[in-house]
Figure 1 (cartoon, rainbow, N blue to C red):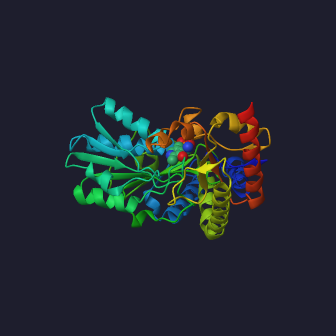
Figure 2 (figure 1 turned 120 degrees about the horizontal axis):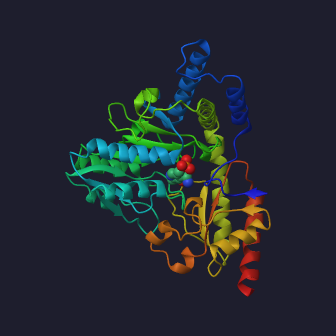
Figure 3 (figure 1 turned 90 degrees about the vertical axis):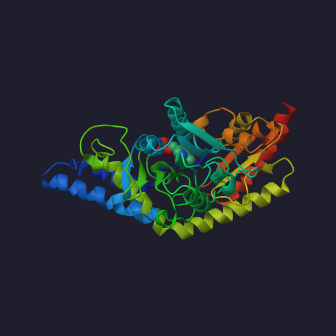
Length: 376
Ligand code: PMP
């Protein structure tokens, strides 16, 4: 198997899985219990919070664990909009955001918020000037991702958020950092952003765990009401096993950051070189790109047809993103790509255990597919 769909989800790291097993079977106390098993569980959650904070570059008390990035994005956007509703009604975002951002904002539109979605540049990145242009005094919230999940496009969030805050110091800025965590260097405290979302399963932890970083002093309204866990912002008994797992996954990503990055960059360069040499293929990813994602098209062959052809050879890739499941890519369409490229787009996303040979086999299979499927 050659698994090139790591931007959809990753295999859980064996070390993370072992820790989760231990948490489930031995350290299963409730962190709110007053006895020592509860205290030990509470300490595990606190340790995980430190590990996430250390990778994300924030303070440990700024980390709130959620059921994943979909929840983190919803909590950030809906929680911030509701907390700020009396100050204004305008929210600015980009057209290349993940569905969990765009749909959460659509729900706010139904509540009377005015959502402005800025188109990307033709290379898939967001133009800081165009984004900030849309911000006015009535803008309460803005959201832009750091790394796009379909193309790998790297957005200059420091510049975008900086310009937005210069125009309106009152607004809250949210950043979807899901595809950036452990993949590209950044630090929450160095970015002029207030809220940042992360997901465990893109980083070798299981699905169903994520985190929202909320800058100290920023007030959100919760989506759920319940007990006093996580300051009441995200009540409910903490998923201690997965929290510990996500913590360890972050710790490992931090320790292995340079080695993983170097391998991803090698793979990225190798693949782009191969694509350039192969007339049947063209890359849709910008130059300013995360090293773990390449979006390419095989003009003339529908994405899904090629995806299943590759699957038959044990190669797993994605058409657009897994979340849009078969729907046409709103990201590539927003970039203004012609239909023949959008309809034939595939996303290849690496993990550090992929090799150059794996990519050569994939290119060979793509070429084979391009000729045999075109004839069919
Ligand atoms: N944002 C981005 C950029 C993503 O790629 C994803 C996962 N596809 C999400 C948010 C949602 O994360 P989760 O699966 O943890 O809900």
